[in-house]
Length: 355
Ligand code: PMP
Image (cartoon, rainbow, N blue to C red; front, side, top):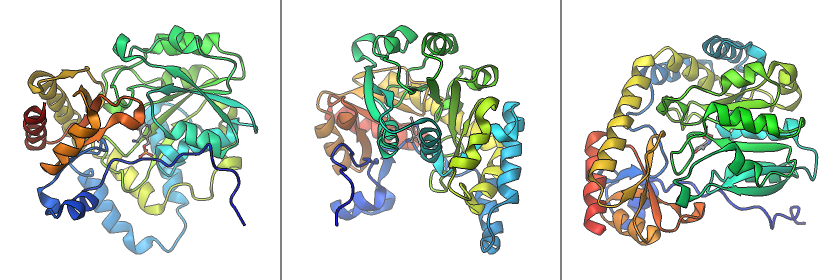
């Protein structure tokens, strides 16, 4: 007995966890600064943590009304209809639903390199094939429609990450529109705005409202601090929004996730504090790190350190965990998540000692 041929599939490499590293190095987990997974430096939205405690006694029932309430609240937030909000187990889950809804076996998707690994993984699970377009360091990771179209060959889904992980660059709405206009009628442009709250640019949800070929991905993992809860969603065009009912895993987001999401939406002060903190940390890193950095619209900064693996390993021995970006195809860089002031200062101090 064997699983199907998974030789083209690769395992997702998450940033290393505090417990894992502490155990390996024989250190106290509390002494470590973890800036490797773009998590929220300020914890979960307090109202969400409260809701999780409050609704714990209710988890013996399926999450029906809470999911409906959350879809409604998000629809209001984005001025779309509830059916256009596809709740999922994290943004990753929403990517799966989009692939399920779009891909026939053997159809292609186009992803960026460097880029977020899960687009390709999800497409392969759904029997799709994967092609790449470059986002070039030599162009400061600039993202344009022309840059994507040069490598476009009628793929069914084109993924745009804006803000882009790991560089922090963006694609403007006018370029997204140009791309969607130039692509075939049957091509869906997915704009991944997992880091959207940290950017000053307008969301592509406006395009998902106007046209039938742009969908937007958002998550509660970053600015709302709910990465451990697993809650994300896609906003899709009204024309085919009802496909959700045919592709979603029953009860796509848990009762706890839905309640936490509703409470987090009602806690704007936490998002403001998080975004303010990230702004400060980005600027501090640009100003203080003794290496080249790129301006980022996310809650992280890409830093050119020479040998990313060596620097990440050495920093870890000093108790600071950053992301080696070798697996993204950038072996000369590390990505540093925006921490609290104290964490960010410590990371900069350690990295500067190593540079
Ligand atoms: N898109 C991008 C670009 C990401 O970096 C991540 C998480 N690291 C996600 C989507 C998915 O996040 P989640 O599943 O936690 O919502």
